[in-house]
Image (cartoon, rainbow, N blue to C red):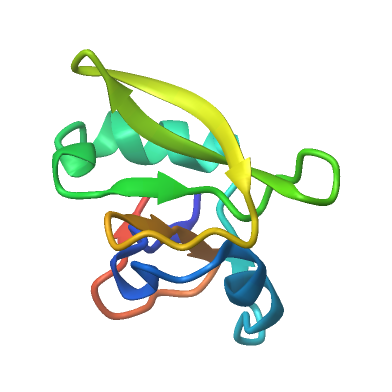
Length: 102
């Protein structure tokens, strides 16, 4: 189990910038983490979509979780892209204020 941030603190930030500025002990969420977050909080994607910086696709892409016709979908986007409706989710083994325990 892990503590997970929903990406709100990283809205409109590039995945590459989030990856290069991770605090000690914190890692980027993976596709598996994103699935767990959606299961635990199925309405999260109604607020914002979630970049998953803990998984890489080649060196220039990262997966994200969004809604397509009301259903969750995983796709990939450039790591140098920022969007105000997207935020990179983070994970830690230690409790952090306002993070969910999954």
